[in-house]
Length: 296
Image (tube, rainbow, N blue to C red; front, top):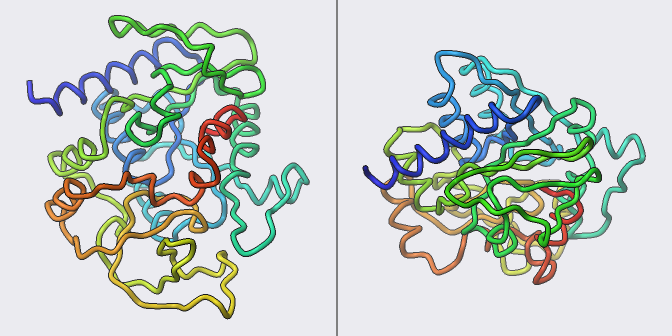
C-alpha cells in the first residue's frame, strides 16, 4: 500500500468507529483544508448513504469571505446538513466579552460558542481536523480525546489506544473530540489533496492582497484588525497555509499558484504552518491552556 492509502484507510476506520460508538456525533467544518479533507474521507466512508452526522461551523464573524463562500458552495454540492454557531450570538447574550485594543480577536471566544452548540444539540462526539504535527499540545492528544462535563481537556486523563482500539465510553455530560487525521502531516494533507484532486478555497493559492505587517507577520488588511495610522497597507503576492479568524491568521510571501508549487514550498519551509497563527504566540502554553478550557 502507498503511505497515503494507509493514512486514508486509518482515517476511514476512525470515522466508522465514531459512527458505530456514538449516538450524536458531529463533524466540525470550517472550510479549511483539513476539514475539507475530512469531508472527502467521510464521503469515502459512508457514500452512497448520507453522513451519519451533521457538519458544524463555529463562525466568529471575522472569517475570510473566500472561506465562507467555499463552505456554503461545498455544503450545497455534497447535500449534507450544516449547523452554524455564531460567536456574535454569544456576545449579544453576554456570555463572552469582545476584546478591545489593536490586537483584539474573537478567536478565543469560539470556545463558549462551541460548548453551547455541543450542549444545544446534544453532541457526544465532535470530529475535527487537528494533527499532531501542528503544535506540541496537539501532539500530546489521543485520537479519541475525552472532555469532561465542562468541555475541558485534562492531558493526564487520557486513554491508551493500543492496536488502534478506541474506547468511546463516556459518562453523561462528557463528550469526545475525535481526530481522524491526527497522524498526518501538513505535507501528507497536501499530497492527498493533489492525489484526490480536492477543491480548496482560493486563499490557499498565491494571490495579490492588501496586507499590513503586524508583530512581524503579514496580516490581511481587514477592518477587524483595527487598522490605524501606524499600519502601512501594502499590496503583496501572498497565500495562507492555515485558515482561521482573519485577526489571528497570517499570510506568507508566496508565488505558489499550483499544488506542486505549494508542496515544494512546504518541503523547503523551516516554519510550521501554526507559525502563522498569532493566537499560538500568546505564550509557550497558549494552545494547551485553550484546550483545557474547551477549545477544539
